[in-house]
Image 1: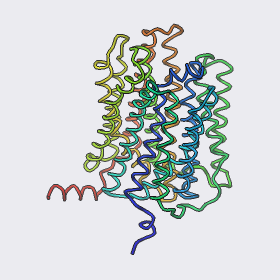
Image 2 (image 1 turned 90 degrees about the vertical axis):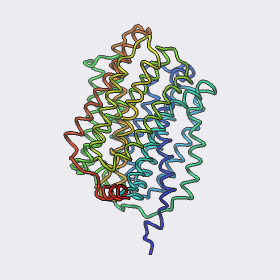
Image 3 (image 1 turned 90 degrees about the horizontal axis):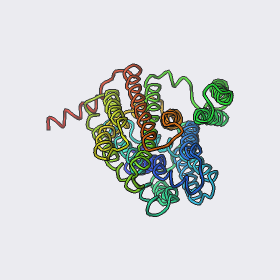
Image 4 (image 1 turned 180 degrees about the vertical axis):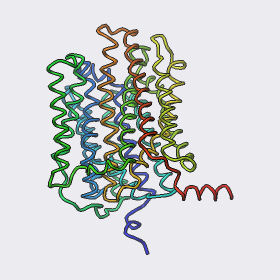
Length: 479
C-alpha cells in the first residue's frame, strides 16, 4: 500500500522542477554581470549605484529566505513554490522595461523576494523526496550541477544577449523559463500537507533582518565616499547593528512562529555548513564580478566573447559536481568540502596574478578550470551537511538558511572586497590601476576560501560516508 508521501511524490519530475528552479535562481545572480557596463550607460547608473543591481537581488533574496523557508513549511511547499515563481516571472518582465535606475533596482528586489519563496520550497521538496541513500547523493549531484551551470552559464548567456540583442533581455530571458517551470510544477507536483502547522510566521523578524543587512552593505559600499571613521559610516553601521540585534531579540521573544529557531545553530553541521557557505558565496560572487570587469575594461573584450570565456568555468563546475557524486560513495562530505575549498582557493590565488597585458590562455583559462572543479565539489556536500539530521518540519527553514547564508555572503563580500579593490585602484581608472584593484580583490577571495576550509576542519565533525552507500559500493565492486 502506498504511503501518503509516495502518492504525492513523483521523484523524477520533482527533481526536474527543483533542478530548473535552482538553475533559474543561480542564472539571475550572474546573468546581469556582463551587461553591467551597458546597463550603466543605458539607464544612467553611477559607479556606486551600479552595484545595487546585484545588491538589490542578493539582499532581498538572502534576507527573506528564512521567511520563505518557514512559509514553505507552514503553508505547503508546492503552494509557496508556485507563488514565488509567479512573482519572479512578473518582476523579470517589469525589469526588462525599466526606464530609470530606480525601476531596475526595484524589479531586482522583487525578483529577490520571489526567489526567496521558491528556492527553499524547491530544496525542501528535494530533501523530502530523496531522504537518504544513493538516490539522495544523485539528486543533490543533479541539483548542484544545475546550480553551478546556472551561475556560470548566466555569464555566457548575459554576454550574448547584451551584445546581440539588448541588455534588457537579461531580464526578459527569465519569463519563458518561469512559464515552463510553472507548467511542470502545476502538473507534476501534487499538493501535500504542510510539514508544520505552527503559528503565523514572524514577518517582523524578516523585515528587521533584511533592513539590517541592507544598511550594513550600504554603509560598507559608501566608504568610497565616507571614511570608515566618518560620522556617516559609523552611524549607518551602528543602526544596522541595532536592527540585527533587534532581529535576534524578536526571534527569542516573539509570540509568533520564530523565523528561525536559534537552537538550530547548536547543531554543528548546520552552523558550520552555513559559515562555510557564507564565505564561499562571498568569494564566488566577488570573483565573477571582478573577472567580468577585468575581461571587458582591462583586456577590452566584448560582452559576447567575455561570456564565452566563462564557458570553461561552467563546464568545470558541472564536472566537479558530477565528480562529487562519484567521490560521495568513498569520501565524507566534510572531506569533499576541504578538497573543493582548497582547489577553489588555489584557482583564485592564480586569478590574483592577472596583468594589464594578460590573455585568456595565460590569465583566465587555467585558474578557471581549477577553481570551477573545486567549486563543483563543494555544492552538493554542503547542502547535504546543512540539511541532514534536521527534523522534517524544519527542512524548509534549514534550506532557506543555507541559501540565505550564500546570498548574504555574496552581497557582503561584493561590498567589502569591491570597496577594497576600489581603494586599491584609486581615483585614476586606467587599465593598469583597474587591474591592480581587481587582482587585489581576487586575492582576497582566495583568502576567504582558505578561511572556509579552516571552518570545515574545525567546526564540522569528522564523519564517514553513509553505510548504505558503502554497501552499494561493495555490491558494485563484487559484481
